[in-house]
Length: 185
Image (tube, rainbow, N blue to C red; front, side):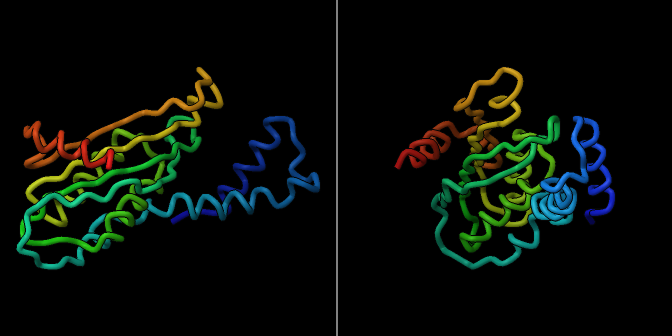
């Protein structure tokens, strides 16, 4: 649960720390706005993937299912700056599929936390494996990190790609290549 009062006080201290006046007209409501924003952008802290992945449908098909270009926004746990991009999730069903919106909702749950991209990629893959029980899952995340583009090295436009493979995807190079080829469609 987000403690809005603690966030408000912290924001006031930050404003003072950078030499601003928290009582200045344009900043008076900033602590409240940030507290509400944090409640929204960190809403995944109290959720797990089981809720979204528990509604499944029976199928006779065991061909790869790919949902690509799922837009996400997350916050880097090292600098508390945004990183954002696309997530691609593929799985090979073992008699059960999940509604397509549920994969996007699962991405949202893990993105709405203080995160590092590599962990988020694995959490999404692990949730799909655990709650959907497919033969395998593969997740690729492409993201731009504001901690790298607006500060530090200052390289806007650079992206980081992370991949997690589970089950039949782990050691099957042909299946992995098919996944990456399908991303280009």
